[in-house]
Length: 388
Image (tube, rainbow, N blue to C red):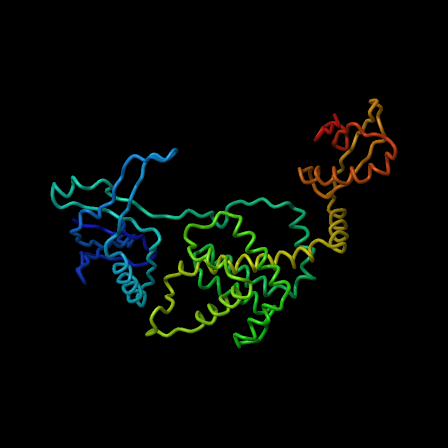
């Protein structure tokens, strides 16, 4: 029985000839396109334990059609260690990136008996993630406030650059680099210039912003669905705030140095081992950045600046409130001006809250039984409210 491991690769490598090469009990071969460009690398391993083959059977669980049991993948660790070495050697001559997370596995029988025992011939591992440039609509008010905040937020630009770089690294599964950038986000603000781990720990522990960020991060990660490939996350979340800060500072120190001969030293290609820590420190940093940025974006100065810009751009919409009392009598109409080029749901929600606040004094002593939210010309009804 043969098991074949196949991995996609990113490379400019082109081969005008190829054949399987046997080394350490493995047979390594290349897959190329019509123009000889390398697209995949495969490794075949002979196995003799037929009882370790994957099985498939009808599931007894409600809503689950089949139970698939991949019992073991023989010599997978040895195969991937060998490929990492090969990847390193060849990248001296032509950069080669093997996508270990997109492994395809095939079981190939060499006899009739072996073929009869195979229930699953192949499977492929993959992890879907949203495209970085997938459309994400934001309320333009948020965009306007960000633009209006440029001057006041300029001193915060470097920490935000670390945060942005870390987010890009997270999206590309570069968790070690992401952790480092997240840590720089914290260090440059709360322990600037300090290298002694004890001092850095104390500086982070003494910051109310860091403590609040930790609290929000833990709450968010404990209540949301945890990623399947973040196995260390539950253990990290169980730590006290002090112990967690100590663990993050210690990891920063470990990743800052490397000793090739040291057992268990971190590996630059084994990024997933640090996904849990990167997720957690990322949540802490995001909570801190959000708190500081919102304080800048949502203050009276920003309100005035945005109002001025909207008036110059003619970005004004008005909503008309037509109210009636409990006897059906029409009350004084109220017009509320909002910023924007066209009426959106956020305008309606915000204007409705403002109307309810103003109505207490405008219609003092009158029972407002119903009202409609209309366009300024009265032609379009956006919402209705009826007390009954």
